[in-house]
Structure formats: C-alpha cells, structure tokens
Amino acid sequence: MNTFVVEGGHSLSGEIRPQGAKNEALEVISAVILTDEDVRISNVPEILDVKNLIMLLEEMGVKVTRHSKGDYTFNASRIDAGYAGSEEFVQRCATLRGSVMVIGPLLARFGKAWFPKPGGDKIGRRRVDTHLEGFNKLGADLSYDSRRKAFLVEARSLKGCRMLLDEASVTGTANILMAACMAEGDTEIFNAACEPYIQQLCRLLTAMGANIEGIGSNLLRIKGVKTLHGTTHTVLPDMIEVGSFIGMAALNSSSITIKDVSFNDLGIIPACFQRLGVKVEQRNCDIFVPAQESYEIESFMDGSIMTLADAPWPGLTPDLLSVMLVVATQCRGSVLIHQKMFESRLFFVDKLIDMGAQIILCDPHRAVVIGHDHRFRLKAAHMVSPDIRAGIAMLLAAMSAKGISEIDNVEQIDRGYEDIDVRLNSLGAKIERRI
Image 1: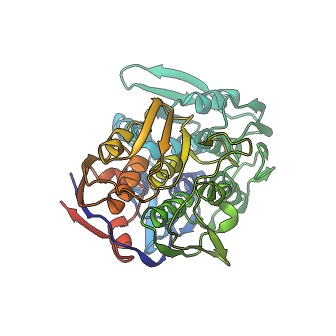
Image 2: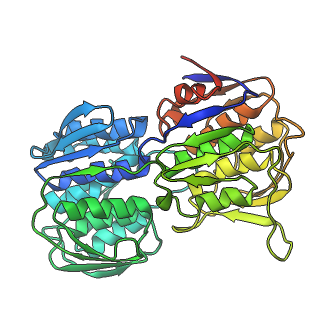
Image 3: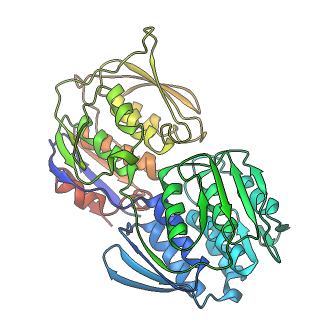
C-alpha cells in the first residue's frame, strides 16, 4: 500500500495540463472490439483503471501497440472467444469497473458475453439493470450462473427497437449504443445519457462507419450496420481533473493556469465553482484561476442557502462534489452539498471534521458546510483513501492543512489521476510518495 506524505500550506503557481478523460477512454478503448481493423487512440490517460482495461484486452487477444505516451493502436482481429467465455475472464472482470464496457461490443460482434457484477469504487450500490434490460430489448437472452456470479448474455442476432432507459446511465447508454450499432434495423434510445464522454463515443463509432443521429441529445437514433472499420480518435481532456485543479487553487489561495481544457465541454463546472466565490477566467483554450484573499459563497436570489447537487448532463457531475465540498470548508458562507447518486460518497467527511472543518452530515446524501474563510487552516491528519474522488479531495485538504498529513491507499487516487504527486509538486506542492 502506497502512502502520500503531504506538507501543507505551500502556495502554488504555474501551469498544469489535464490528462485525457478517464471515463471516455474506458468507453472508446472498449469499442475497438467492434472491428477487426486498427483503431488508433491518442491522449489516453495512463492511469491504473485504463491500464487494467488495456491488459484485459490483451489477454482477450487484442494486439496493442504503444507508439508513445498516451498514443495506442488496437487491433481486435484475433479475439480469443474461449478466453472471453472462461471463468478466469469473468473473475478478472469482476475486479475491474471498466470491464463493464466490453460486454456490448462482445455481444454485438460475437453474439455472446459474460456480464459479472463489476468492481471499482466502494461508494454505494451501482445497478447494472439498465445494461441488461437494454440488451434484452435488443433481443438478447439472459441467464444467471450462480457459481460464476455472472449473467450470460446471448443473441443469435440483435434486433433494433425503441427503448426508454430507466435512468440516464452513462455506462448503460454506452454499452447499449455499441451493441445497437451492429443490430439489424433501427434503434431509438430515449433518456440516453448525453455527457461529452457519450458524444465522443458516438463520434468514434460514426468514424468507424456507424450511423448515429441525435449526438449530444437524450434521444439517440441508430441505424444498424453489418461491419465497422478502423479509424483514429483523440480523447478529450478530463473535466474531473480540470475541476480538481480549480478547487486546488482556491484551497491554497493560489494562482494557476490550466492548459487546453476544451472549455465548451466543461458544461456547468466553472459556474458551480463561481457559486463558491472562485473566479474562473477563460483564456482561449486555457483556464486561469487567480489568487484571491477571500471566496464568498453565493446565496440563492431569495436569500436561502446555496445548494450544489449532482445531476445528469448538462447538470453537475457527481465526481466533483467531493472536491467542491472540501473547497467550501475554506470559503465564506454556507452551502448544502447534495450527493444524489451514491449513498456512501460523503462518508469521508468525518476525516475533514477531524481536521477542523465545520460540516454537518445530515444523511448519507447531504452535508452542510460552514466555511472558515481561510481564517482557520485545517489541521494535518492521517487518512485512508476510500475511493478515487474522496481520495483527491483528501489530498487537496492535506495540501491546504497546517502540518504534515499522511494518506494511505493512494492506489485509489492513482486509478483516476496520472502521476498526480509529480505534477502537483511541479506547481510548488510538497508531496512524497512512500511505498
């Protein structure tokens, strides 16, 4: 288990560039299974979750060529169907959250796939019903194997249909979309997720020969094709990293520039930080966050307490609420953080309370933060990262705290943030990794 030893209180300055988007990378890399031709993908984040997915594809028989950092070519012309149906494959998938994305492509191309309950963060229940119901509506049969603890999804041929998703699931939409691209006939997906990750996946699939209409909306129309071909694709900058860096600057009253952020794909994220009093300036393709003496949380127009809540795109991504909660501890005023999607993501706030933060945890989904306005610094603490997003929030808290903090289980942070200690140290942070 690796540990970060963090000396807090250092001012930051300089430029930092976000990595490629993790969630997009997991989707588009899985999509290479849909063709037997080369697919070249650049700006791939070389983080643990993505590396594990690439290793899984290699074990399945996909040829992977790494041209340079973040630049890969994938060729899935020789998929080992035997391995993809083995117990070893099912067990590997059960430990890797990103593996859920290979099910739709395997089903579309080979008519059969095993669907174990995927691994990943321990942040509450993550349903897979949307995926399975979508496959079933496309004509797949489902049977549960209690010994393997996995569903066998089979279809001689997938048939296009109209479906209304029970929730706007990003991974569910992506999985069903990839399967529908090679189904016979037309498919309409209502209540589809429309995050930039899904839009990027649609663009990749279209470049591979798929016929998709409604990109960027919650109604996708797909005309099935028999085969897809190779193409090239570039992954967007990671909006979660961009938001994390904005929060980092505010917590440390520092001035930084975040390079090449693809501003139009950030949605409401800059505006939500502005509601916490953080100035965010767009400068061409970059974001400049100036140092401020004070960050004042806005109130609603009727004077009531500001609420920041997650919502499907174009609402606020749930992956940034943990960061915004930590930022609010050093702002002036109060805010209600409402994490609707996951019932365990706010449980890390007890560590922040130990550090001196004023937080009232109302229930598993809501917390009220009363900001210190930088008059009182958080105290150093010993913490354990429970998941990616809580982990980065703890790291940012430790960077602003008085004294030396330790964060164990930083492998969780590594799953979502590439070389984060090295990159933050280049801005003036003091983070030591102990193995």
